[in-house]
Amino acid sequence: MTTGRKPIYLDYSATTPVDPRVAAKMIPFLTEDFGNPASRSHAYGWVAEEAVENARNEVAKLVGADPREIVWTSGATESNNLAIKGAAHFYAPTKGKHIITVATEHKAVIDPVRELEREGFEATFLEPDANGLVSLEKFKAAIRPDTVLASVMFVNNEIGVIQDIEGIGNICRENNIIFHVDAAQATGKVKIDLEKLPVDLMSFSAHKTYGPKGIGALFVRRKPRVRIEAQMHGGGHERGMRSGTLPTHQIVGMGEAFRIAREEMDTENERIRMLRDRLLKGLSEIEETYVNGDLVHRVPHNLNMSFNYVEGESLMMAVKDIAVSSGSACTSASLEPSYVLRALGRSDELAHSSIRFSIGRFTTEADVDYTIKLMKEKIAKLRELSPLWEMFKDGVDLSKVEWAAH
Amino acid sequence: MAYSDKVLDHYEHPRNVGSLDKNDPTVGTGMVGAPACGDVMKLQIKVNDKGVIEDAKFKTYGCGSAIASSSLVTEWLKGRTIDEAYAIKNSDIAEELALPPVKIHCSVLAEDAIKAAVADLKAKQGNK
Image (cartoon, rainbow over all chains, first blue to last red; front, side, top):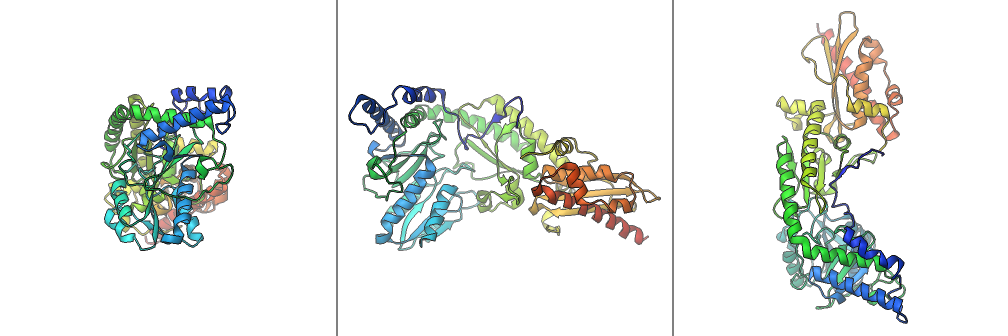
């Protein structure tokens, strides 16, 4: 697509731009300080190793971990795979083969669990409540004597809700279950203190927090010590948990991004909350809109709304001046509504007509105001076209209409 | 997704959006599709005493191709007789709008909408 002006970026939950301060810090490690951190015999290696360890400190600091608990990976998907498969394989012989996770997890958690099912594990995919949150009672009820592992995300990527990680973690501790948390969407958005949080394994990504793509980390608790089986074998890097030459520049970028997050998140989150409230207020002036997911237990960065009586794909066409995500995968032949919104009990129609607005470091008030204006105009136009809107306005109960499915 | 210029034109500037009085004996109304499938088309035709379509209006809940397909047929229907309208094929619509294979169902729905509108009109006039 070639349009003169780039659309306004409101898709920070998909990825963030690399902060210019992060990019500046990375560049020397591509050209000058290019050494292999594993080279012990010369200064090129030592410089790179020092940079990697500094970055490890920064990542650990943001989340209240010990630097020795941080394992570099290629991103949150790899961290999730390593944590889930690695812990399940290690502990299955002594504990059992049952895993608990949630239906609204990211595919990078769901698919590794599905893979383990093919290997003979059994999994429970908990349905969250209508607000997107997993109730502790439901979680407790799913536990079996052979439950070896639980995986629950910190912040949901589609609806931004924050799960009760401490509550779930305490239950896991009481039941001797390894607890993994996908925190890809949480860093820089919610306070994470692993010194206190009862979590055994936690996945991180750089590119959701203004770092580069292609780098992430896995927290592996030392006290009490948690063991995982390596998924990548080779030179024995990262204490044997993840082999592969360390990408120094990427790691430096992640360290710098997490340092900035630690220092700036309090003020940044206040600003983003104001922008989100402004967006929410503006969009709520449109009739028949629904916020998806709990508004209280939620990061301010995310606003996911459904616009009733407009179809998802035409909605996406209408809003091409803003870069947002839709709850409907409309590139496929058959429309597939978001499985996350379906798990909240949203109808297909409402799931299809949902938009995820995600706000970030470089979003301005003008961006938000433009978005509100655009949405109001386009929703009005599409509803003018919509026979469903007409019927709704005429007082027809659409759920009672007999539609001819096709 | 790459839409043809014709689809984009109909999507941006839909022709003949609106509603006719569905209780008018000279108006035939066809409503096809289902919200859960992501497409609902309402097509209405108004016929004069010579059996020629004088006016056509539509409203569509659906993707850009569905909106374009229904907008296009309202243009085509005006001035045609009922029998000519009935002869419009989905392939004509798909070809005119250069619909990709995954969007052929939109043209099928538009053809169904014409047939439903004609059937409604005939039922009304048969009852006279």
